[in-house]
Amino acid sequence: MQTKPFRIGTRGSPLALAQAHETRDRLAAAHGLAPEMFEVVILSTKGDRITDRSLAEIGGKGLFTEEIEQQLLSGELDFAVHSSKDMPTKLPDGLCLSAFLPREDIRDAFIGRTAKKLLELPQGVTVGSSSLRRQALIRRLRPDINVITYRGQVETRLRKLAEGQVDATLLAYAGLKRLGMTDVPTELLDPQEFPPAPAQGAICIESRIGDSRINDLLAAIDDPRTHEAVACERGFLATLDGSCRTPIAGLATSDGTHLSFSGMILTPDGQTHHRVTIEGRATDAEALGQKAGEEIRAKAGPGFFASWT
Image 1 (cartoon, rainbow, N blue to C red):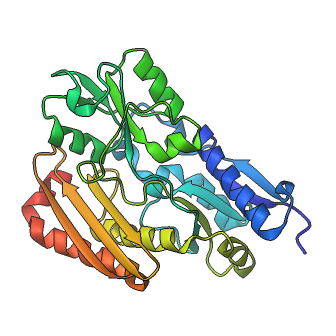
Image 2 (image 1 turned 90 degrees about the horizontal axis):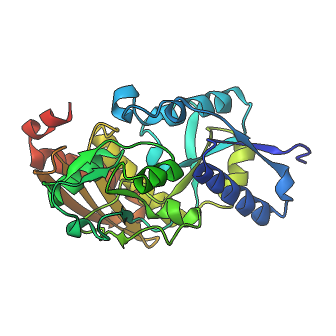
């Protein structure tokens, strides 16, 4: 019988806390426990502390998880809650992504100050984004626009926009919904034209491999269709060695039996891109993603990837 609270590791941003609290509430409801049986432990990560440089310059996605994972491995935390799209494809030995909450809206939200839609922006204006995928997709659709690296928490980016530092920015609509900020976007971008990052909109829970007590606890809130879709998308990403240095988009959907996936890779300037689609059994999700990665790599040819280094 559990007598002390389970310890949930998370970053301290309002969005990270909203995700941790949603996980806590789902677990409490699933197991008939009081919310007080789950303690949210806030940890500062290197990615949070260094905001004046792009993630590619300072080491990539792992900078948002390293400190949390150290405490998870040491047993100081029972499990951790993350945005799935922020997770490196290779996790530290001994850790796994054991559960996923039902996926939110996967679309990117455009927030414009000088125009309400991306294609309506005046020529030569400045758009800020921290994502190389978004930067490349903007350049693909609007090569005349000045795209700059633009980091910070959601609230910071919106404040900079309001101050006039940029004319527009893009954020994940899922995050805005979780923060109760659905009135902020001026346009929701079509995922056919502006495909999302792999795993966008999905909250994942990281735990220790072999910790059956914790993993059985988490299994009660795992959403199988989200789990399958994200496994496929992460398989695609891993095959392409995807990181914060590479513009990669991908989206899988699963009905529990059948899975469909569409992926895209771009050059950073957005002027060259390749797409791939694949379908198969949902039980083969990760393998399907890996196969799609191999197919698009062969289609693009070795010269394409020179721009990614």
